[in-house]
Length: 68
Image 1: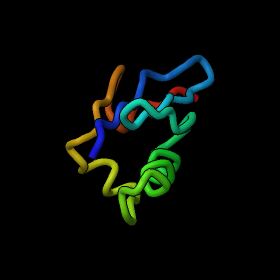
Image 2: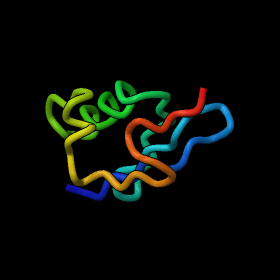
Image 3: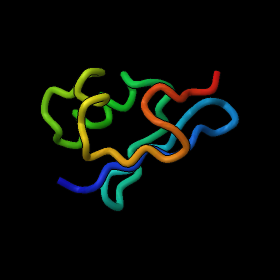
Image 4: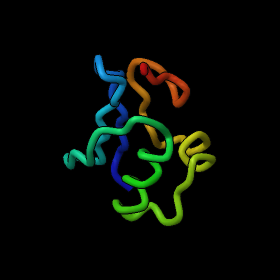
């Protein structure tokens, strides 16, 4: 699988999500990240999967860092 990168929170709290060279969208929580991963072929990804999956590079904070 390609590398997954979740970028630091933007001013609106969203975090850009990329798999390989493809930008998947702005996530505003773990459910968004899970949805992007499912659409990118990561199977039945859910919040628990996103938290536990070691293939995500969390930049600017881990899965609990969201600015609202």
